Image 1 (cartoon, helix red, strand yellow):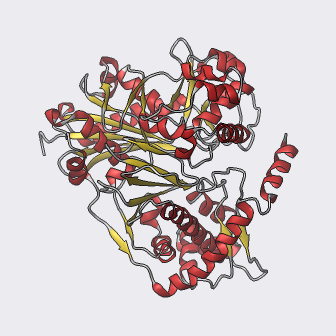
Image 2 (cartoon, rainbow, N blue to C red; image 1 turned 90 degrees about the horizontal axis):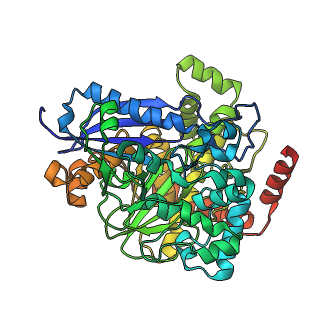
Length: 555
């Protein structure tokens, strides 16, 4: 209706970004626009040099293009009066960051750094800093650093700190010319507001910052590598909690977007974390699984306790006054895509062609016909390393039980099951550590597309799974935070619970666990845990040795 207030949520994923406008009164989507990053993840540098497999780089310029293009398109499609748009919220994968020079421009824009991979935007899934992460962890343990318990006792190579050490030691020219390192989300907020800020969620989970103790000390960083404490001077910006205003649109940004100058822009956020309000979660004890190419699990709690292998525990990073634990799995949808692209037969391809459907749909339909345990297969879900609770990017996937009679859909089902087994392992670690898990919710692209996967989750977790259905869940979450940043005086909300209750997901499908399937899965889960500990906890280091050999051969 004319005159009703709206907010914009902009969500940047691994391969694309989208902007969506939502009505402030009830969270209804009014319009949206989606755009892929034209270059995607880079395979080589401009001079033709192939990038190592562990590298994951993108073009920072394409994020800026997506930001301005999708907001303009979504606004035009909505037909809204710009005066009725009261706020913008931005989320990006984390840690996805870039080095910025003294002139305020990314180093990747300079001709002299055009073919230096360390000057580029590094994605969350960049695993080139594995050895640096191991050294950071080892030094923190030796020094008994208090921040390590917030990180599950292991520093992950996906995080910003190991990647910064990688640049410091392997690309000293890039490090020397860098005035500040910034998360891409903070960079985009700066493009809109002209303000240099740091969202507490990115800083907390990827740089180990804490509102209570500040994070890693200069002494610790010096112990890791002499001179590395200087990196603290390159992490600039006012720290802002979730749901707070970072600034208002500049005259130039407002002109480019077709909005009013001064329109509120919220603090930067992590793409998975913003789905917590989108799912309707307002308090502790509910685990949210955000299922896409990977899985991020967020769990709110009133207390901070050490949990092995978590990706962080930070206060005020998701909702005010609560600690938010993050854990997850590095490959979920990516793992299923691998199977559909590399582990199918001519029979499956022919059926997909005849039925005019995807290979995923054929594999899912055939997998649904199998009873739990019927495939005779058991898999480990580490196809892109293990994020939780081992935090070891060198681990790899495995399928046990293959025979000459094994069919592609049996492999596919085993991978679906392995993802659920991996999440059960994570939730068991939380429970054993004293962090209560009362309810499981799920959001993400896979949730609505694959009911079989959701049922397998419920059966293996032995808990109902509350599957949400909001389109652009991360964008909705960012929009809810934008409504908080705008405040009630501008038509938004001052109270987070009121904002979430009004705008959060209300259309939930519940998957109830099947006790008979659960009994079979209990036995398989016991075997999964045996494999998990044998290959992941030092029983056999073969996965590390294989990766070392692969990297040595490709050097």
